Image (cartoon, rainbow, N blue to C red; front, side):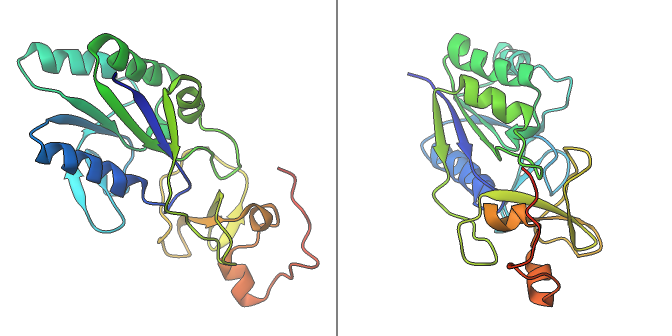
Length: 216
């Protein structure tokens, strides 16, 4: 039976790499798929991995009806055996509903990849809707690590090297951006609550024994 599968994890845990691998495996078996993405680090219309792999994708704009796009592709004689969606956390809830409809009405597998919570530890609307609708939720087995060596469970946003907990939910960045830019870092819950990034720990600017605990 076709499924809507949500592959989730923190940043830097290999989501995009797995999306590319799933597409490669099915392509090797003669299947053809559609790949959607939103706000990829490599730019519009790209799905990229931090390992350096890149492929073309359809940019899922805020007003795009994903179900209608697939139906149009099929009606024009195109072949679609499955659908891959990367950066699915950025989709609107109604676009997640459209993915479910692709599964139910067109009987196609849909593989969605995304992070669950933002830098404030709040659910992305797209991820929340995926949790509500997905047939299956898979946590990525490649565990990202906090600077302390513990499993990273939270995404932190940094500006000029300082962790921030206020601002727009979506600001495109990466875990390898220069310190002066908006960047991201994965942390364990303990150090996310204490706003203690790797840079702060290395500089010795903050001590784990005296750090104030931040709510959330």
